[in-house]
Amino acid sequence: MTDFRRYIQDVPDFPSPGILFRDVTPLLASPSAFGDAAKAMAEPFRADPPAKILGIEARGFLFGAALSASGIETMSNVTWPFAADLRRAGKRTVISSVISQGA
Image (cartoon, rainbow, N blue to C red; front, side, top):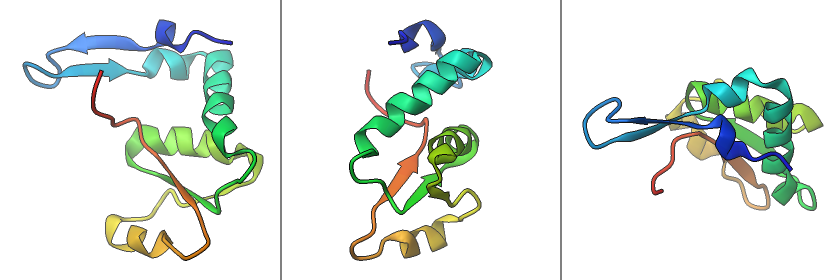
């Protein structure tokens, strides 16, 4: 298994003091690591695939597209007012975003 931490660069105090930005550009630049990341991200959903994948912000689109390589429909051009419509009884939606909080 790929050690993804090798491909995530910490950028302290960006975009402002006190923020630790985790840059995934090195991961995106490595086809094998990016492919492994997409497979690892998809693994929890293999038994019960979602109906949709919603890619939020620029890099979320990239990871969402990689997740959709298995044929899952993506919604990459949805704006937030319409995103609420993706929640339907009996249908699961995966939200792909590289924005996260915590360590």
